[in-house]
Length: 189
Image (cartoon, rainbow, N blue to C red; front, side, top):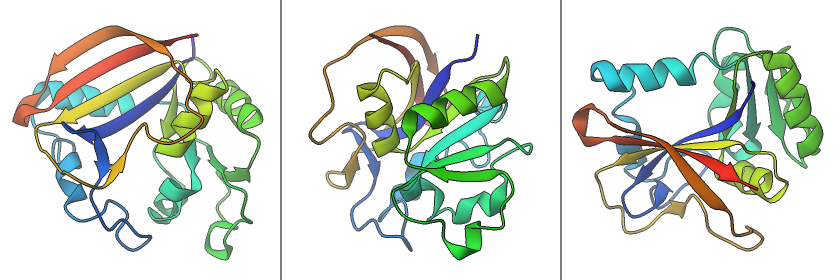
């Protein structure tokens, strides 16, 4: 069965980006620390998680994640299609990327991504996208890569108005190398 899965690295105090996050500083000050476990992957457990992440069959991302990453040069991994949630027009640099479709219709984006993914999961990117997907009942699972660092400021994963209360069922907890803990939850609707 195809699941929609948010994969997100997060500090112990709940931040997914450091302070001073901008388009030119997409992870904020010091935010790169959150991804050190993955690039390059350190050890067997971290490699397993990265392999899962990179074997998904489609991507749904928010503009705020897609554009600062320069659209992953049009190919997040293995030529899978990418849906970008945005109310803005497609930027000229992304208009010629054949795998990328901009839309503001989250239900349609998730439905198309599920179909395109086939038996594989759909990778979900972005805090705002995750919040909208939870509110719409579209996000199946959350994989948090909990990094042993305190940021004290920055952008939190789940913050702001409109996020409904949801119960989560823990389906996996793995101790990764370098102190990271990989926690996987199923969202209960």
